[in-house]
Picture (cartoon, rainbow, N blue to C red):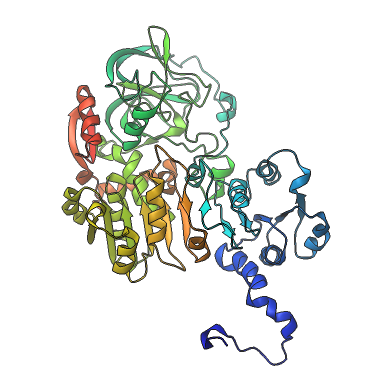
Length: 558
């Protein structure tokens, strides 16, 4: 006996002994390829597990016109049958000595567009995630794991944030075509200036006289006009071991000199410096799907992209960069692909926030989640990023925007940015996701994690709606980088997405954001709570550490 709603009437001529497979496995596989992943013509697909579900995924991908369908299984006898369903390449994972995701990345030129886990093994789910491209990955968990919970492996959140992509170390000649030098080119000289240097983790920054080298080919040297303090600077300062270092990555300034081959900028141009670049020619830049430049992506070694050296030194000893920007210095050197020319009338002390936090929040709402009119949204963490998410959701016409924070003093300010309901998670006794489900009638359509805490990421996932709820994680955790979530959350149709810089391509997209600000279409001024002199940088760090500011903008002496 079954409930009426759990039965489907079929045509009397339909062969019941065949179509019974459509009541679960075959339909699940086809639907994963068509409804969930929406596999596109010409794409690359990898499928882990070639049972009924996996072969049905392959069939769905084939019918959608996928160009490459890789099947992975430990049973080689399935290889021939898999071809019938569209598998173009077969791998027996027991027959290879290197990690399977490395093999797949090599076969697909950087990772599959779509990756499907059809085994029911959370370790395989992790491998599937590692095997797909940083451009637009999708892992479908199609079989119920015997484990009670899905424990994603260490550093997986960083993978979700697309911070785990392969770092390409290229010579300067590979970064772009260097223009031939001419006799009129004036070689810049070393500059000595003031910079706030971190010598030990968590200890006050020290104002030092530093030497700043001339820009090398395809680089520019910037006179920093103002720089804002981002929570990422605070987190890195508290925990980094790569020292001495000059932090800072939200900055605006004026081009002081250019290196050989630079044609986009001239001395005197107003620019934003950005922590991730856009070369315009790598696989990601030309894909139309990603802002994760493979040439000028996020730099973690404290060195320049071009030659893996520093441009800062103190008495001949190198000082490390931060995110290839290092704006806590009166002058800095960046790759020309990591700078954006701005209108000379744009106020640098405001638009510097668009080089990271404000843009990241707006982009998460617009580019990543694509918030729709009338939808419900919950935001965990109401700092600069979270409030920018709220603003983006409000401008898209979201009907309900719930803000969650442990600081009740943020409630009134949050209303300005569109938050309709505020919850202090410390003031409630029941699980926060239950409160949100009750407020939204079953869960939010969109959930955003803006704290940098993987436990909060799990709560955000629990707080969104079954069937279509999407959780976007923007924060970078200081500790415990792995996410744990019950497998059933994914089986119920929820999705978890990561984003870097809100999906914006810096050179292509930031000028339009600046134009929106100049036209008063977006709010930036309201995010700046403190304007301080550069010499007061340690006060800015304390204000942020104590939760007493959104953005402190530091002004260099004129």
